[in-house]
Amino acid sequence: MPRIAYVNGRYVPHGEASVHVEDRGFQFADGVYEVVTVVGGKLADEEGHLARLGRSLGELQIPWPVKPAVLKVIMREVVRRNGAQNALLYIQVNRGVAPRDFRFPANPRPSLVLTCRRTKFQTARQLAEGVPCVTVPDIRWLRRDIKSVALLAQVLAKQKAVEAGAFEAWQVDPDGTVTEGSSSNAWIVTADGVLVTRPASNLILNGITRQSILRLAGELGIPFEERPFTVEEAYAAREAFISSASTFALPVTRLDGRSIGDGTPGPLCRKLRQAYMEYVGSPDPVGAA
Ligand code: PMP
Image (cartoon, rainbow, N blue to C red):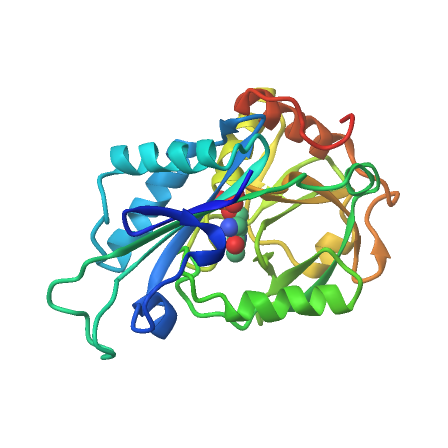
């Protein structure tokens, strides 16, 4: 089945999908995005992602390109045209095409682009063994709560992880606390079994998966705290994991080369991942988990 993208009102073959050279997403990274996962044909956490898209747009004073209800129709149509059962649905909205000028254009016509990529998410081995992470300095701007397409710092962080043979990079602020992964939120479980993740603020992206996991932890009676934690605390944690639309909850078993806990995936991460899949309404797409 050929890949199909959506670009400003048209469904086009993925290989031919393109934007104008003066698109402000291309010129200034003047736009925002969302990634919604399709799991077993179902859109996971769709309402949360649309709500955050609206918030990001509002913070940047970019109008909705189409009404949210219309966007939902387009999202489903892109998934349908790609025959996607397990996939990543990417949505970008930016301030549109205008002569290159830092100032906002007077009458913006926002660009809307959707792409869909089929994926198997993680491998069964990554889930069974957990993944390694490394820490890197957080060199980003101070509006990390906006899901901006300006991702250069995250690109550099992820590349550092890849070069170190790791799956993800945990970014660290100058005070020694972990902010979040390059494309995920960071979690630990303390020696006395308390789930810890950084509170939502301008310093992190408030992950939609993060919010769902916190809610599920509450429902399951798992004690949790939203507070910053240090790299040292993470080294000494019983468990660590990351969350995002594409990794759900994925165990981290090594950080900067040190084993976390006993070096194997922990029970809380497993429990929360399972609860998240039940909430989405599809079996875990990875392996036999
Ligand atoms: N933090 C950052 C910096 C991210 O890029 C992402 C993934 N988009 C997340 C957290 C996780 O967010 P979500 O659960 O909404 O995918």
